[in-house]
Length: 248
Image (cartoon, rainbow, N blue to C red; front, side, top):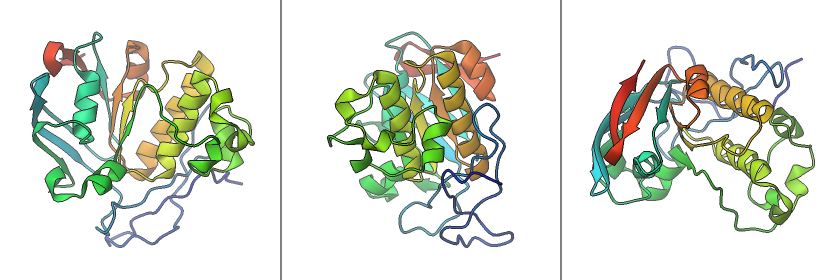
């Protein structure tokens, strides 16, 4: 029997209609659990298909860029480079969290055409250090026990106080919180930096299942080159000031 962790909305064959609550075909996620359906909502008010493309055109600021980059539905693009090169600035710029010049497009619709909150819900940024504003984890989001178990967390983790969580636990819970919002694009800044190898593998499988099942592009920043070889089809070295150089 499939284990329903999170639910996803799917485009019907030959139609752009998306039925709320539809469950997509399950995707095997080796190493955590046999099945990992996911949740995805179209961006607010658009009624568009969940499958997304991300296009970054000459994005920059006085501190980085300009950058040109694209990612198709379900594609993971890996970004590595030395500290201070501009990797985080690039992700924050795509998420519209910092002032930038240039433009970013989601399925051909420019970032400037979205309300800020709607863009940030659709193009979701996971920082290296997660932020929490309520005392209890479950006050921020809801997830099934299966979803928690898939990332090596106990089923009662939503009842925990944030202050008692380790850095690695907060990191995995922040990922589940991000996915629970149903983003169409994932921007991940060192999502496994504080995790051991087993927990990192669980996060990798979870993100890949979400991306491939829901057609979500992913920009994944990591200093771990082996990890990027596992998860990303295309990889780039971020040079000083955020310039990109393809990696073989």
